[in-house]
Amino acid sequence: MKEMYSIGEIAKLMGLSVQTIRYYSNIGLITPCFVNPETGYRFYDAKSFSPLDRAKYFQKLGFTLAEVKEMYEKNDVGYVIDRLNVHAKQMEESIRRQQLLLDELIWYSKVFSHKTSENILNKPYIRYFPARFAFAVNRFPGESPARGNARLYLKKNGNAFRKLEYRRQNMILYNSDEFFSGELSPFKYGFYLRELPNFESNYFLTFQAGYYICFQTRVLTGDWTSDIFCHFFKNVARPPYVIADEYEDDLFRFKQSVYEIQLYFDQPQIE
View 1 (cartoon, rainbow, N blue to C red):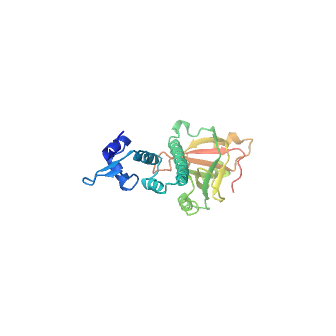
View 2 (view 1 turned 120 degrees about the vertical axis):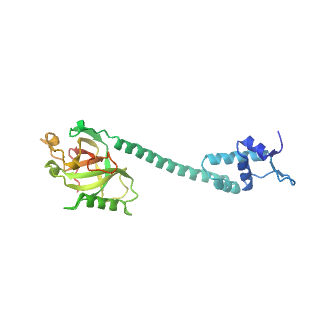
View 3 (view 1 turned 90 degrees about the vertical axis):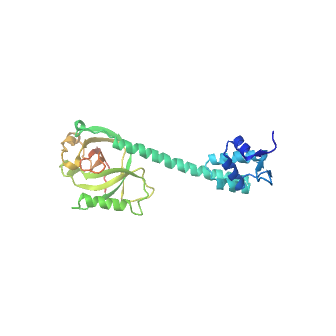
């Protein structure tokens, strides 16, 4: 085995570029064993193999060169262990966030892919929902939908709530008595949340898991009838509220959007 290696030789041996070896040497990660006084060429011995390979490994694990240099300068195994553990926790959090983002991408794709067609509109069916959580504001008496939505966005983007994990799907709550009489007068506007926040607020709603009687309709056009549900509640107490979930099929016009109307038996009262 040779005793000294040129930059080009050690670069080839370690699977690194000449520029990388030169940079590592310049910042002190490795030290040449000999520098030709006439040419300035640097030569390295076998003692550089392990530091170079370890530096590659640290970078593969996500450490910056500055972090690697600091560990080399300290030369303290306890410090290296601490850095590895800190980096692992950061990686875990990054993976958790990326997984949440992946879940959200898949969920939003399903929202846009929600199957609607004219031949299934206004026809009832039963659907199971897990527990759901929402952020919603009350509609003031006589308030227009535009003003109600403006207050919703103002509250949603305020300091107290802007960091919540919102899901981009509009939700409207109707009083069931008014809904069954054909009157479209929302009493809450909201968005769904990924999970229930860890603090209490009157703006948070929980919809319990269970089976819901549903139908799809263009609820904002008024071209529908609540008679669809009537026979389901002949001998059963009418639920106190009706949920309407928007399924967007146009990125700018929303009045024609299809909503899924949902009613649950024995729903808890929302104040």
